[in-house]
Image 1 (cartoon, rainbow, N blue to C red):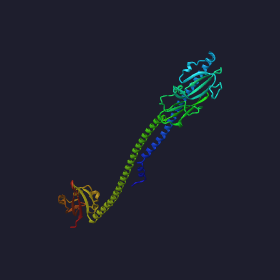
Image 2 (cartoon, rainbow, N blue to C red; image 1 turned 120 degrees about the horizontal axis):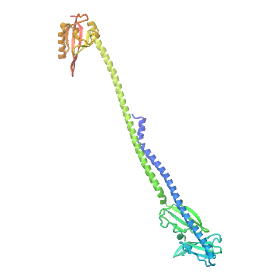
Image 3 (spheres, rainbow, N blue to C red; image 1 turned 60 degrees about the horizontal axis):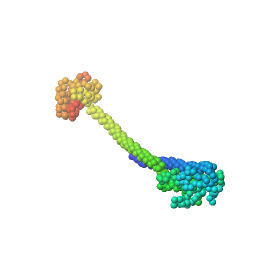
Length: 407
C-alpha cells in the first residue's frame, strides 16, 4: 500500500529537472558576472588606447611648439629683419603645408596677444585639387613678427593614427572652435558603432581646443566578452548536465532501495502472517494431540487392560499404567525389558507364532496365554498383536493389548 514515503520517492524521479534548471540559472548568473567583468576589461583597454592616442597627439603638438619657439629664438637673432628663412627641420615635416614669418596676423584672428600661441582654421582650402581643412599656427617672436605654420592635420598626424581601418574602434579629431561638424581627422572602422560607449578627451592646440573621440564597435567588446561567455556557458551547461545525471543515478538507486525495502516489508508481513497461521495451526494441532492423547488414555483405561508398544526384538518401549493391576509392576520397572520375560514358558512358542503371523499377514492376531505377575503367578490373559509396518523399512515393531481372561 502506498504511503507518504512512497510519494516522496516518486517525487525523486523529477529531482534531476530542478537540479538542471538550477545549474543553468547559476550558469546564467555566472555568465552575466563574466560578461560584466569582460566588459570592464574591454573598457579599460579602450580607455588605455584612447589615452595613449591623446598623449601622442599632445606630445606631437608640444614638440611642434617647442621646435617653432626654438626657430623663432635662433633665426630672428641671426638674420637681418625680414630675411628669416624657415629651417627645413620644420618646413619639410610631413603635414606642414607652409612655413614663413609674418609681420601681422590675418584679419579675423580671435586673439592678438603676443604671449599666446594663436591658431586659426582655413576651411575648404584647395590643396592638390582637393578641398581640405587646414590649421594655421602663429608663434610670436620678440621683434613683433610671427612664425606662421600652416598644417594639414590628417597628414601631420598620419603616423599616429592607424590608416588600415582594421582597428575595432573609430577615431575622430575635431576642432571645437570651428563652426562645422566635419572632423579634422576621421578614421572609420568596420562594424556597428556604440556611440554610448565613446570616450572623449580635450586638449589645446594653440588658442583652440581639439577634441579626440574614440568610439568602439560591437566587435571590439565581443572579442573580450565572447570567450568569457562561451567558456562560462560551456562549463556551466556541462556541470549542470553532469549534476543532473548524477542526481538521476542517485535517485534511481534510492528508488530501487525504497522499492526493495517495500518488497522486503511485504515479504516480512507475509512471513509474519504465515508464522502466525502456523502458530495457530500448531496450537490447534497441539490441542488436538492433547485431546487425542487424553482420548487414548481414556480408551486404554476403559478397556481394563494394558497397552504396550514393542520394538522389533519384542523389547518394551511403552506400557500403560494398567500393568500395575495386571502384572503387579509399574511401567518404569517393565520398560526396556523383553515382553517374553512375563509370558509363561509354555505359552512363549504360541506367542512367537502369533507375532510372526501378525508380521507376515499384517493382520491383527489374537491369542490366549498366561502372563506372569510379580510373584510369578500365572495370570490368564487375552493378547492382541498388530505389527507396525513402515513402507520403506518394513516392520519396525508391534503394538499389543492384554486383558485379563476369566475363562
